[in-house]
Length: 181
Image (cartoon, rainbow, N blue to C red):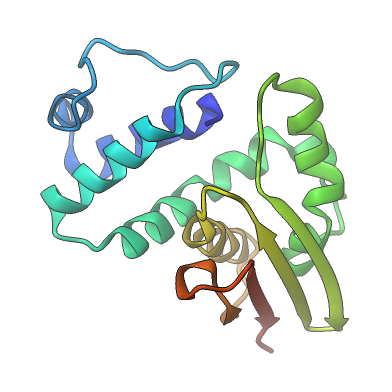
């Protein structure tokens, strides 16, 4: 898993649970509390899954809801990190439509070992993008949260419909994102 996810998860935990909660969470998840994460490194996927599962148990928030909240939380930082790949005139649907060809391309080139999900996005109407999400990690809930966070950044209202989902046994997730007028 890309180190950025761990660094952002630490920020999320601190914002939601307070200072010191990150080390407590790591310890309860079976991870050395002294372990640090670097945005330029990759780490075992099992560590993020242990942290999220433990965070769910601590907060009582189901894993899908926690992952969506995390995705929404990190969206502003992701937009800031990759601002150079985003055209100034783009808004929510444009960013989503072009994430794979811009942001994910940069991530794959610049971050050794990084394997972000593969997104195939198609503008199906002026106010709609259909996203096919494929990843062995099955973190589509994070993608949904990021989508909502991007819309919040642009002060737009969207809906996200799950047409298909790997968590329901489908081969991929299909998210239909609609901008509301």
